Amino acid sequence: GGGGGGGGTPVRARANAANLSAGGEEKKEVLQWDSSKKIWQISQPEWLQKLPKEQRFSLMRKVKAAWEIEDQDARIKSLAELHEKFIRTFNISIEDASSMIWYVFLELKIRQLSSEK
Image (cartoon, rainbow, N blue to C red; front, side, top):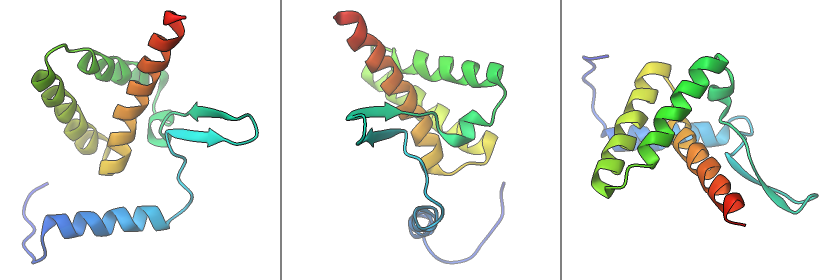
């Protein structure tokens, strides 16, 4: 990127972008309540589904590794870096990048819970 003068705070621009994406087509959330089956369902973010399988697993492994860092500060820093990288690399929104981070988190949690039984 680079350049680009213009007024307006980045925060406001960001809020506008969020409103636009919310107002657009129905976006599938990572975590959705299925009222017919009475269960929560998690689904991969759409931008992630479009990637080749190998690349998708590679990214998910990186996020998983970040979530598993014991030290909280290091974990937050690592997740934030991945978040930034996803936005830059795949030219996606902040929300899309976040949904990837949460998707992996939910997968991990579900796996932990089912292994505890």
